[in-house]
Each structure stands twice: as C-alpha cells, then as structure tokens.
Length: 127
Image (tube, rainbow, N blue to C red):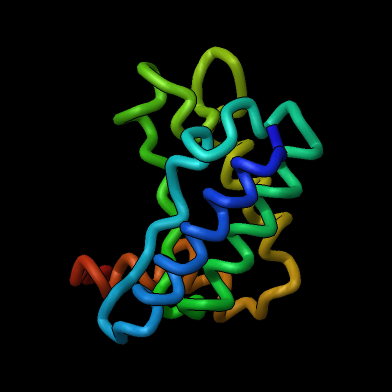
C-alpha cells in the first residue's frame, strides 16, 4: 500500500540486490511482477513503484545481466504473477509495457533485456 512497512521491505530488497549485484556471475530475471505489486497494470501508482524497482535492478546489474521473463503460460493461469491472468494484461501487452519502460535504452541494451542475456545465460544458440 506504499506505507512504512513497504519502505522497510523495499530497503531490505535493496540491500540484498546490491549484494547479489556485487557477484559478477549473478543474473536476474525481470519477472513475476504481480507478486510484488498485485494489480500493477491497473494502477498508475503501483506501476510507477514497480517501474522504479525494475530500473533500479537494471542499473545495479546492467542490461547484460538482466532478462525479461513473462512466464507465459506457466504461472499466469494460477496467479497474478506477471499480471497475465483474467484480471490483467495479456503477454503482448506485458511485453509492450516493458518496451515502453525500456524505451530510453539503446537498441543493443533492449536486445539484451528481451533476448540476449537469456540466450547467453541459458546457452541458447539461434541460427
């Protein structure tokens, strides 16, 4: 709800994320956003908080260590994990929203966020 308890939780998250970012081989998925802020796709306030946390994550790790994951269709039917449920955004809308968030990044960095980092991390070879 944006109260004092949320700020304490976010600061705890920041401490943990800074510690993980200090380890060079750790990568992070930008995923499961609905667990952080259920209903974020319908709330400008929640989306703004979430967008700030995602941006903070990318700044800590760099695009080369971050990857977007929609979890489509694994988790969506059972939860608001990525707001991909009957209550919210479909997968294309979710990807579009993140594309808008990442518009200020270079094309190369956006490619890393949406595909490149995952290809490298999971050793996916595409001809």
